[in-house]
Length: 130
Image (cartoon, rainbow, N blue to C red; front, side, top):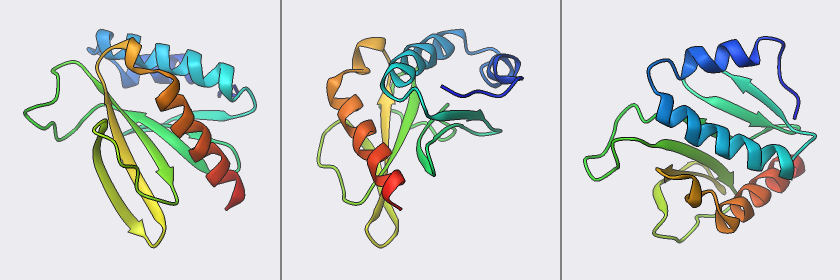
């Protein structure tokens, strides 16, 4: 996966004080790097963004945590052309017609499974087709 020269220091700054969340992110990154070796990743102020031609996914720390969410978790954001119907989807919005943004709460590495990777593959393909 393509990263900037400052990726590691930016990543450590992003997760400063959130070591458990950093471990979850690293598990996610490992799976994404294997699935999408040609993608790019960019650490930004509020999220870590994954791109092909366009943004297809992101990882972030929850800013407005719902009380039922685990104390230690990250959010994985996926963009698709349709609304996913799954209890794993914590929040889904349609910011533009036929462009759905989905947030999945990840609180353990085992949740980065084939179902999530399938959604990420769909998001990757959707972004490439834009």
